[in-house]
Length: 251
Ligand SMILES: NC(=O)c1ccc[n+]([C@@H]2O[C@H](COP(=O)([O-])OP(=O)(O)OC[C@H]3O[C@@H](n4cnc5c(N)ncnc54)[C@H](OP(=O)(O)O)[C@@H]3O)[C@@H](O)[C@H]2O)c1
Figure (tube, rainbow, N blue to C red):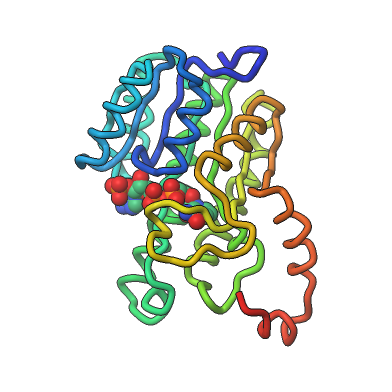
C-alpha cells in the first residue's frame, strides 16, 4: 500500500532502464527498502540499474520485457504481481528516433507507433486488469508535451505520444471507481540518453525534476502534470493558436 505520506512498498518500472523512470523509482523509494520490479530488455544497462537500486537499499527483481511482444504482456504482469501487490507502476518505455526518418521510412514509423502507442496500450490494459483486482495503487504514464499539439518537427513521435496520452487519460476515468489512480505526466525536453546530443529547448528539465513532480503527484493524487509546471500555461496558449501562426514558431 502507498502510505499516508505517499511512499509505496513496491514499484514496477516498465522500461526498467529509462533514466526518467529510474529517477522516479529512486525518488519514490527514498532510500527505503522498497520492492522494485524492473521490466526491461536483458541488457547491461538493466543489470547496472538493478545493482544501483540494490546498493540504494531496494529489493530488486528483473523481468524480461519487450514492447513488441504484446502477446506476452499479460504474462509479464502475472509475473510482476506474483511476488505481491504492486503499489505504483511507471510506464516509462519509449523511443524518440530520428524525426525525419520516422515519417518517411515505413519500418521506422511502424516501430515508433508500436513501441510508443500499441505497447503502451497493451501494457496499460494488462496493468488495468491487475490493478482492478488489487483494488488500489497508482499508474504513472510518461507522455510528453509533444502529445498536446503535434508539430511538424517531430509529428511521428508526437502522434504516437498523443495516442498514448489519450489512452491513459481515458484510463484515469475508467479506473477511478475501482480506487486505482492514473497520473499522466507531460514533460518538455528532459536531458537523458533519449535526447543525448540534442540542444535543450526552453523549459527543459532533468530526470530528477520530473521525479520530484511525479512523487508529489502520486502523494496528492494528481491526474495530469506538466514538467516544469509552466508548460501547462504555454500549451494552453499553443493549443489554440491558428495553424498559420503555429507553423511559423521555431519549435
Ligand atoms: N527525454 C525526454 O526529453 C522526454 C520528454 C518527454 C517524455 N519522455 C518520455 O519519457 C519516457 C522515458 O524516457 P527517457 O528520457 O527516460 O528515455 P530513455 O532513458 O532512453 O529510456 C527509454 C526506455 O524505453 C525502453 N525501450 C525502448 N524500446 C523498447 C522496446 N522495444 N522494448 C522494451 N523497452 C524499450 C528502453 O529500454 P532499453 O534500455 O532496452 O533500450 C528504456 O528503458 C519515454 O516514454 C519518453 O517518450 C521523454
